[in-house]
Image (tube, rainbow, N blue to C red; front, side, top):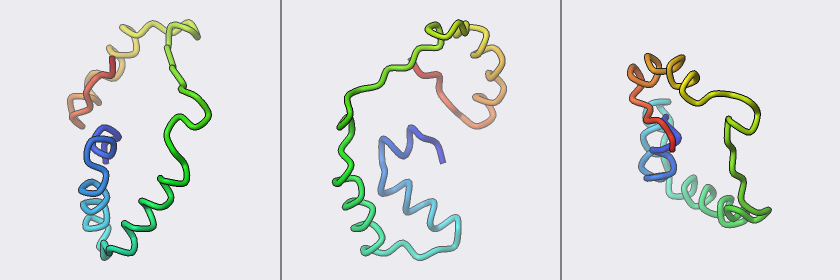
Length: 79
């Protein structure tokens, strides 16, 4: 599964993942996932911002290295 799909449509993405694995997707499973996420709110420890330049990595070089992977698996570049 793509991370962006999980963030954009979490329940549909999980339902599809369960289906692909041959597992039943139940209301109980979704309720438990929702409860887990509610107990761990986003940014509860502050926000994190990662920048490859901060550790001396050139973004253009990384994009060049992974361009075929991104094209094959339809992974968009993050901004």
